[in-house]
Each structure stands twice: as structure tokens, then as C-alpha cells.
Amino acid sequence: MSDFDGNVNCDTHGNSNATFICQHLASGEGLGFNLGYDPDNPDELCPDAWCNKCEEVLDTEGEWNDKSEAFADIKVMCEHCYEEIRDKNWIQDDNVYHNLVTESFAFIEPRHKVFLEKYNVGAHSHDFDHRFSSALIT
Image 1: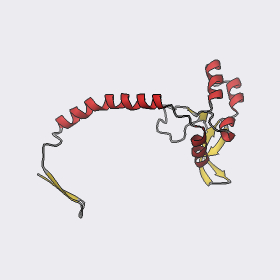
Image 2: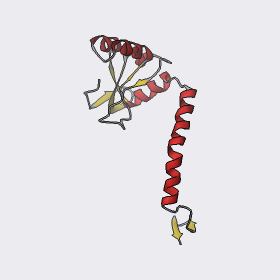
Image 3: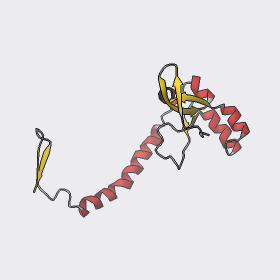
Image 4: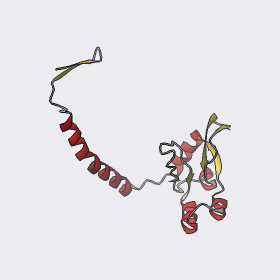
């Protein structure tokens, strides 16, 4: 969806990075906030976004095509408007969030233990002087 990689001059926020959202999110509230993922840019701060109704059309069509794109009628927004729109439309699923946190800890804890053992973290005495932001490791 987002081949454009430029800036936009927003009436409210001035010159800013451009983002892309469906027409419904622009004026909606509580519509859901689905995100696109670009493997070439996995750390993108404001990925393309669309509402739950657009997600239903996308699921039915199986891909972005003329019908799903016409329904979404993608709009360009500045990154600051994007953040405000995301906040108004995000629907928090506490069960999904809880599962994400639980699975993340299950993934990280054994690796953290290996790291601590491999590098003998905690095996050395240390004295940190906060006044000078320095440490003496012995």
C-alpha cells in the first residue's frame, strides 16, 4: 500500500513524515486498528493501518486489490495525526496482551539464564558511585 516515502504538510502539525490509513480511521472512533507489516522495514514506527471493516474486506478478498483498496480509500496523514487516530481507534484485547507478555517471558527467561551463567553476571563485586557515574569492578 505505501510506495510513497515522503513528507506531508499537516495543517495542525506542520511538516512531518507521511503515513497511510483507511478512510474510516480518519474520522472514526473504536473501529479497531490493524497494521500492515513490511519485512523490508520491520521497525517502521507508523505502518499502514486500517479499521476492522477494512480487515473483513481484506480477508474476504484475500489480498489488497481494486475492491479492497476502493473500500479502504487510503488517506495520507502526518505521523502525529496517525498517533492520535491510533489512540482513538485501538481496541485493547487484554487476553491477547496477557498471552503476549507470558509467551515473551517464557521465550526470554531461559536465554537470560544462559547469558547470566556464560558471562558470570553477579559473580563480581562492584561499587557504583552515583555522584560520579562511575563504577569500580573487582
